[in-house]
Length: 573
Image 1 (cartoon, rainbow, N blue to C red):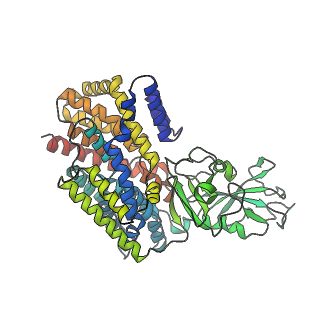
Image 2 (image 1 turned 120 degrees about the vertical axis):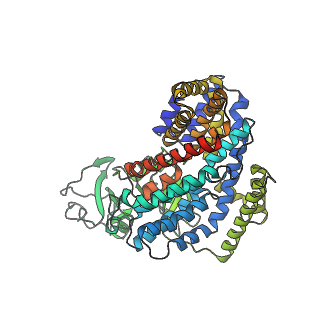
């Protein structure tokens, strides 16, 4: 388990591969049975999450969410009123729609609006992510973490959460959290001038250009070719016969066949294509796709391309796209594009063809050519929202179980052709489901091996002299630390068996402890790696790691104290 945590924290591999490997190890050593190893693949919570991906995707593709954001951003207000107008509706939307597509849709719009109105996007994007996280705690379907804990409760013979059961905690922490963000985020977050937003320090892509025979400065120096004075570009290195010349001197002689590695913003790198004798290179070295367009995408922490060289990812056949530049959190990459090893959060500048397919490997957050949404798509989107509302009503009034209601809603989407089977396959994040399913078997190993009991006993022994509140506090803090180190769902599954043992030993109800674990696992505010939405805005807003700590730590304290007080004196009264 320690090795698993280290692997997740230091990103030694894709999370689902690490978890699956640990699961197989536990199965091989007999710590868990084959039935326990595979129980997560039929768990109600995991299956519900799969169906939720399809339902949320049908609403997302209609463009209704995009239009809503455009309306929210209209008008001229003070910074605090402007933020309040944006965050409160977003948090309510994220209570019913998966927060990841909300942030994906809103990020480019917020950035563009900020640029047009002379406001720094860094003042808005972290609050945007946090608002969706807070809103997701209000309902059962607001976040996958709630559904995972619900599935664990059902798996162990408990009733599980009702649709609005978490609202008693979720609504207060959302209101207090949003109030904090509106009042203080403007002072705590960095503000960068609009004129600086295109400087390399904020959006520093690494691109590669080939010197051909038509280049007029062959056998002349870098200085004479004026390659050191390009606006917004920095010549990082020259690759010649598999050898790198770095740093580059102004007196370096340029040769035909040299590959120039540049760092700079999108517009300047793409302008290289217009310079005579310089050809912008893609990772495979072949020509760009026909009828191409530029797309900016961010690599997710569950992408199949992680920890592979760009040239080994087979981008063209998988996505009909070519990678021409890479941006990594304010780092200046000094190698050719094809040799860059991709990591979570890397932003890729791609030339995409007409059949561009993003799959689940990265998020297209800034398409250069924005597609207009038809009236038919909007009508279909409202119909999807209608089916979702019907599903919520059926679950709320206990007519159907959550899984059954989700399955019926998905079937209606298929029958009304709002979603095709092919679209459903692409909307489901299979890597996320694999990771969650494996987590259930790992949770069983914690129980079978006695680790969960040992952790629970240690937690109780240390905190019992200080009362039940101290025990709740310790359970929350440990869960929250784990969710900042790894994914939120994995942290919930890891800590749920401990919560069960604490409830059994202290002879208290499990439900309040399960709610504590669910909220603590979702409340990832201190680091950008614990939650997908934080990872999305991390690169898009040009943030640094400490920006999340500065604004996220007070929010973490607010959410923690509010949750524990309500759980202790309301739910456990």
